[in-house]
Amino acid sequence: MQDDEPPKVCSDEPGLAACYAAAARGVAASGDRADQAPLLSLRTAWNSAPMASSSSLSRAFGKMARALSCLSPATSSSASSRLSQKSLHQCSEFTDEFSEFSGEKLPSTVDNLGTLLSILFRISCCSWGCHGGDHQFEWLVGRVTNQAMAATNLIRSAFYDESLMLTRGIGEIADLFRLFSSSKDEFEEWRRSTKKQRLNKYGPAPVRKKLEQCGANFSIGESRYQKLCEVGTHPIPGQIPGHYSGAGRPVLGGIPQPVGIYVCYTELGYAVASCGIFLSGMLHDQERKQQIFDCSSQLRTSLGMFSILTYEDLLNEVIEKNRNDENA
Image (tube, rainbow, N blue to C red; front, side, top):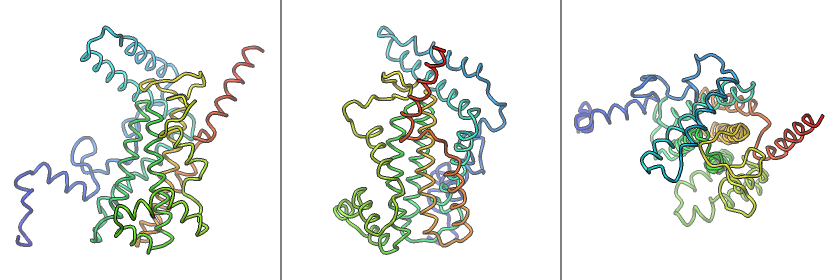
């Protein structure tokens, strides 16, 4: 092919070629944000909206509850599917509004998370220039971006445990970036490793052991990592699924729980910020390195107190306080 001859995909699949070209530039190919960064905020639809009131949230929750009440054993599978999709859509709307008006920490966390993901998205697509090579670094950044976007959609649909499962995976990648940023040789060895070598030397446990041996702190602390495993991944006795209400009963997806929203955005923000801080040390572009480090640090600072480690105790405190107020 001549240097000035366009790739065959441009003539055979012009739509696909346009999407690839947009991805390489770090912009959206279509929609409301065509030719703009697609992830400037996870709540772009709400940026110009007025602050939500508690009454509007109540109405949104009521609509969703009525949709769920229509799901009965006698409902046909197609009708049940439509109602289920409708309830999930209403759950997403409720979560977006709640995240917009709920205090200072949560809105700031969601905005800072969106900004950082926008930058990581563009790095994974070589938006600021391609450095060649095998793109293993960019693909790893792309994995973080995709998993974080998927985790966000799960939060919006009230699948909190499932979101935390993806967050745990991002935390494992953060530990890899922590190791690679401290030793270029480790990154090169990881790139050349076979599947067996990766499992033996670069699985979650071996990586954490390497970090411990060289005196480096884990990106995701041991107690936090274990809790993410218990809540989001491994089935253990006594672990109630979807339980963020304090009622002692499991809650299935599609029903928003404020504590679940707080916990999942805090954990997702913490994991993505950890990735950003350590992957920035692997970049050669000083301006981009500082930009990612600053955005990651700002995201860390904006995180609230409801985390995977504290939410049960904090929730019990709130319940006890409400009970005492009622008895007073």
